[in-house]
Length: 555
Image 1 (cartoon, rainbow, N blue to C red):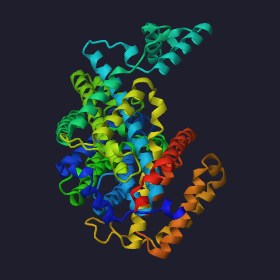
Image 2 (cartoon, one colour):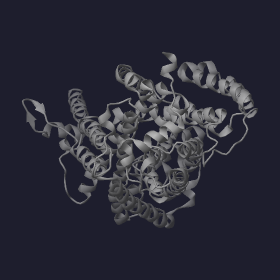
Image 3 (cartoon, rainbow, N blue to C red):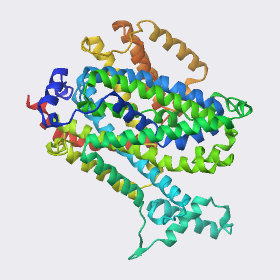
């Protein structure tokens, strides 16, 4: 059985399946400009309008360097993605790449993790969109009922906190303004049989609208994405251009007020801002020339977004003192501070546009992963059904809409935020490790794009000894108790050093594996618990259906 769990698909098999199956009806319409636009849409989402403020508050102006470091770390992964996209130009992203490199069980785990990543990312984006949308409406003097713009749990917890505050005899004014608003939403909400009717209607509505657009066609989605990205880049250009005149260089001193620890505290949110490039690879079968255009688009969007993030951070921290940036809408805030309320209003509107475009790209990517898994026999056949008129994976798109819209109507944002990273890091590690495997086996010789080769035969081992000696001086045992995954990190680095010496591993994919693995050690226990439950559900589906129905099993 162990052999059949790790049965692999050859590159030729995957290309043949894509050419002859249902998905051969997909429309090849995307060029390098469209793909780069999708990448920018996914990367520049809610992050540039919200999390950039908190990262700047903790790290000061030096956070601009954090975006550079993080982009460099992402480049190692992006290069590996680009080589895979050139070698296996089909939809399915890291799932398809794992099928070629590591076999069916690993491919299923990655595919199942990607489904979670895309669904959870979209829930976070939809809920963020709702917050910005209702805030924008209030800017125009329109009050949207709070009980129809929040989730049940948040409103109930705020109301309970208010009751406890009353009983303690403390003034209600001591509670945060948002808590008071949520508690009021609970009391104002209509009731049915004693049940408070509370739902985040804007989050559900935008998900349904975006799903309908994705269902109707890739051309329409491409056009909408390109328009939204142009608007978004115009506003960011406005922020940088106008804001530059209000920069006071004195605000950049001290450059790193909280040292490297303060700068690195924002690494998880900053890293997550960059992962959108992986969604480009899900559209491979709708590209005119995927082997040439996918690698270019991935690197173009990373470079463009890095420059924009660095410039935005420098403008923000130059306009006001970094201590003032711990707010949820830092871009609008700094322009209000310099009495440019019109620009602040434009930014609030553009935040809604930016988040809409990110939602569109993620909602476009997930159905294509369902489709590819179904085509391989691991999911029910209906998931690979292509609409005869719209030429999109219709059933998979509808399921994706339900999977995102229902939780975003009723669930809390905080519940989802931490879940977005585990599946992503898993996928990134598999992609980087897959390049090492395929290169060692000589299976990427025909690829039109290859990761630049730097021989890591000695470098990986020497770097391991130096890093381990340094960490040992910092009491590694105590650190391992706090973060048990560090033991796994060091063990895998040691294995890579030995295998790298034997097979002359390329250095860049190894750095990609180690970077993502180290960032995984920063994740909390709750992330792993929920991911573990999701994984158990996925394995149950695989062994009850996918293992028997797999096309490789039939072969």
